[in-house]
Length: 131
Image 1: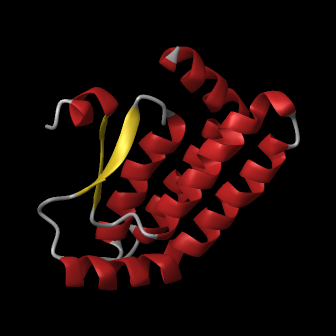
Image 2: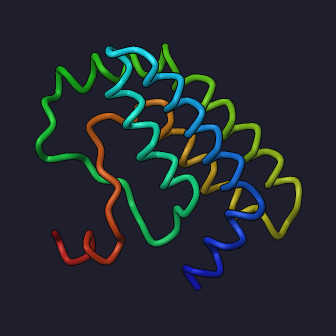
């Protein structure tokens, strides 16, 4: 079921959302200061392409103050328009009854697009086992 969900997601929204993250990553990597943010965008692109079967958890190695400052910079540089991209796509998906679950998933990704630093994307199976 997870594979079918990922294929449908990719067709209806994931391709364009992932391309948006890749574009943001390339633009952020143009400067030395933006490289860590660009790498985060590339990590999120993979999640935007294939989100089902993976979950987002807090990174146990993060430094809370540094993550907070980095997330503020992320929001200013790329987070607000990536979030807007998810909100527009989520509303469009919710216009059809069959795609409402995908729209809800897109709204969850919008929250991640606002502040992704200090979080890890892990397989759902590994998270269930406590790894």
